[in-house]
Image (cartoon, rainbow, N blue to C red; front, side, top):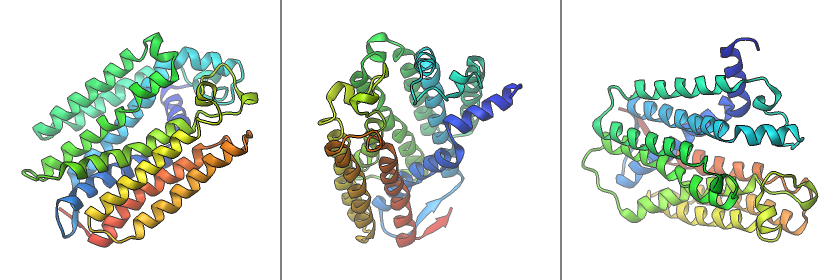
Length: 314
């Protein structure tokens, strides 16, 4: 595409497919937002324009993180793609379908959109937005540090907690809509950890290969070995199941959601164990089973709350 808008649209479609990640962002926001309401008390849960605006901002935050990662890793991505690494060789920045200047322009467009969405927001939401934006910006600058860029485990420890930072924004939207509400600290921790762990599992599951498929690209199997790397996302999945089953019970929901969650976890962990015992190129593709679990985690939780408690527009 010869114009910037066309190139940016192409980039978003390839690297942040709206039909997948916009829906995922909506599901993530409302799974947490409705859960907080269900933990607060009995009766139906509520959706309003503030919640929809908050969900839109969460999606923009996720897109901004994608853009930050692109700018942070552009040189390494081009090098790996040029060398033929299958994860990178078809990326728009490698093929030349998009330019670095286009991604920079997209970054500023997202930033302006986020600012505009918060002009009339409540003070708590504005303060949380500024804090979240600053932390994400620090990650964009700080994670250029060679010590982090060149150490996958250190990158995991520093990058992955950003999920919790984004969840705090959802909390701010909730507490603005329900002032004076007090929630049990244990319930909040269970919800945060339960929503966070599947994303941690996803991060580990998408970077695993058999020795014959390894390239200069750092993977968890290269660092930890095929016998250990698949077990870590399996542990994260189990933690998520325990936490979210507890959240479901505290929300007064039936056993339907926990049972579906356990089934999805069994599929994901089964995929990890298959790779562990039968390490082949085909079995190393662990990302799809993890994404299925994430889908069940978020959409399943919000649907369980909506169907069992009822939803009203407020």
